[in-house]
Amino acid sequence: MFESVSAAPPDAILGLTDAYKADPNPDKINLGVGVYQDASGKTPVLGTVREAASRLAKDLASKSYLPITGSAEYGEAVQKLMFGVEDEIVRSRRAVTAHTPGGTGALRVTADFLKQNFEDATVWLSQPTWANHPAVFAAAGVPTKIYSYFDKAANGLAFDKMIADLKKIPSGDVVLLHGCCHNPTGIDPTPEQWKQIAETLRSMGAMPLIDFAYQGFGEGIQEDAAGLQAFCRPGEELIVCSSFSKNFGLYRERVGAATFVTADQDSALRVGSQVKRAIRSNYSNPPSHGAELVVTILTDHKLRQQWDGEVAEMRDRINGMRKLLVEKLAEHGAPGDHSFIQQQRGMFSFSGLTPEQVERLKHDYAIYIVGSGRINVAGITPQNVDRLAHSITDVLK
Ligand code: PLP
Image 1 (cartoon, rainbow, N blue to C red):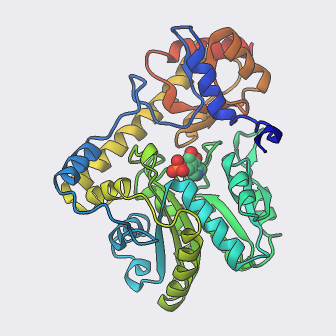
Image 2 (cartoon, protein in one colour):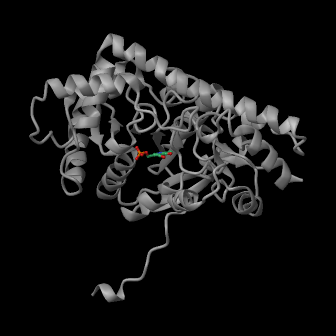
Image 3 (cartoon, protein in one colour):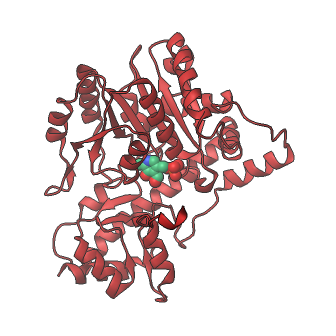
């Protein structure tokens, strides 16, 4: 049977990493895959994660199965981090959180849940969005459509077009929004715009689905939840898919969560039972170690404070590199205004480079960027920024 299987196309971004690894140029630069790197180009294990791991190793309670939706402690910690410790959603128990393998797992569980309970719902995605979004929903058999998001000419948010598109969405459909640090553009709505987006979805009867993969990488851990909180009103529903891959540096541990905020506790119990059904036939129950690390850090006052500092350090480094790149581009005389790079938030920047320019950067300068022109700003270091700016200037001229 396997004779008849044709090869699937390689993953565009992971394929880029392979090409980077194979490049013998000692000055090569990888700005492709979305992984945080420190100033020395390493993806660090956070000090809080090391401390939590050593505590857990000393106190290995059990390796038996977790409940289908993970531990209740984890669910509570995740909700408090997103909504606030004293928030009505947390206190009223009208939300149900499932611990999932990564943010991708959260999206897939959500997609299966939608397919099984709302057959006719379409999920609306921003144009552009994370490349895996359409793939995850397609795999679950959930149809997707797009709404306007990026204004290429202004290198900003196409807000009016976005609202106009959202106003056409039928009641009962689902609108996926990036909670902060939009991937791939790095462009987020302002607090005022978030309010208007929430108002629009409310008036259309559409369900907000917030993909929250970069909490803390934009303005701050609390500040980055402001967009999501625009949808939090008593009795109102939303879904949040969280990932702790980036802000805890737990990429390979696969820690995420799918949170369904329902109107009341009774609905939460029923929705929770359907979420369990979706998980049971998928991976049955989640892997525990990464989530135990997250709970240990979030529930220990000292570790929690230390983690705030670690997230701030990652955020500040990225924003520092944005500023430095803009300065260096100006210094090298790069044509055009690149100040938009400094206004974008999170790990990514839509650089405006064309596919041809991206290809030249790879071929002539050993600089690896995704074809869309998306740059992983966290791949920039004080050591490589000058060569990067010089090379970009060359291909822009
Ligand atoms: N959502 C967005 C927007 C992302 O960028 C990513 C990861 O790159 C994810 C979800 C999934 O994260 P995870 O690695 O936790 O599955």
